[in-house]
Image: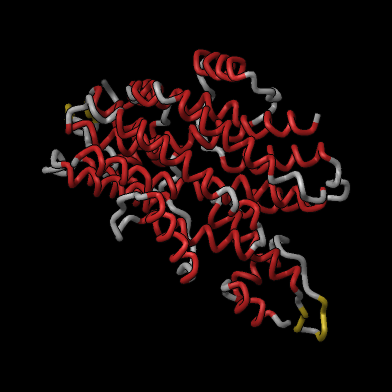
Length: 206
Length: 206
């Protein structure tokens, strides 16, 4: 298909697709004339993937390119590289917080230990968690910290179910699945929280 | 305190604080001379709040200003306006998705009905949920859609616990609490998912 059809199929404007091509987020099509190229289903899929990363996941163009490169690098078939992709997409999505305080780092370590979670020291979510805990403390929202166990319970339960869906999958598609689970799963949970919170509030108030 | 002290207390550089002042995100201090002003604890708190909204919540400066204006508008003491703040902060955080498909909107409505959730038609999370469902479908990730009930269970359980923490609070602080619960609670959950996913994956692989 030509670029116009690629645009119709994905709902992404032609100039945006050209930008993705220039930035190396989407591979070039097969050139059929000096200023025309042919695209296929793999391009449709890739454009949608870029869209999910940038629009839903909020990744910058540079971060999306890095994550896509890791997802498609040779040797990604090995399980170790799935973990690398998981860390990369997480790191790209975590908020920019200052260096976390010692007490929040300690609290994070305690929580991981109490839960019996196996988490490498390099997991970017460690610093993210400690950084967010600092915000709660500084803003005087101790009640929400009382919910830490509820959040951890929810995260643990979901993680087990999420990782179970990896089972039936060939290792080639795992990297993409992990990225989508992180990005789209997070957005899904966010939206559902927004609905459930309104409902819980309305039940409480009436 | 002077602006330098405000900067030290909050860890936010002076030029950034000046930018917040110019953009109306932080109220001006009490002027003590033509080019000096005095700031107090309320300013410290406000700068941290702006930081939480923009750095952790990923809100744009304009969106943060709108949310802060709603949080502090006269009459916010009434419960109806708490709901307004909740919708505003959610709308600012939801991903930019295209108009959702009819089938995803129907799926969203079904889920809300099956759950017995009371959700107004104007809740911005409705369109967000439908939009994310479309991404899953288009990217061929049906397994994750099988987890929809798990995500909804988690969201519901958390929402009930979250709304419970509102109980003891005077109505004046509710708006801020709701915003922080949405923004920081979401970041907390994200980080915890990142930790729990690694742990669940490592348990599965060994």
